[in-house]
Length: 168
Image 1: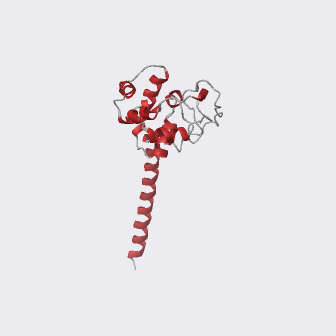
Image 2: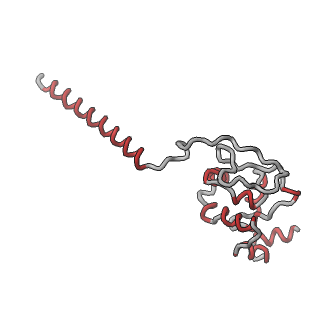
Image 3: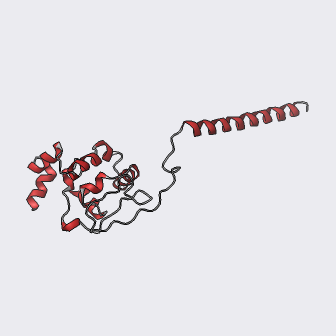
């Protein structure tokens, strides 16, 4: 019978130690952990881009609050860019991007981190956009410059470019 008060005392001390550990862990996590996408406040809704706009100029956050890129109703002046000139974009991915309203290099060149993550999830790419540097390539192509890959694609040295040249 005399052990019950000792057991209660030990249980209370263990509970106190547990709670102190929880508080310390919580504060250390807040100090050392980078903020995740869920903790970053949502930006105000971006305006919808119409098909008649000449260039996409809004730099870092040309997307809806959830990261979905702003879409065009159709290609500007009825002419879309050949997105297959970007390394990693084949005919199937180009078609998918077109269905999302992405027709031009300058649209891709302004993708924010949130947009890249959204597209990555949408296409189930697991970081491929960053690995293949789509945004950088699209920026060069939007300026009228070429990349090593686009030069090869223009010559028909890339399988996806050969199939598209035959269709034309």
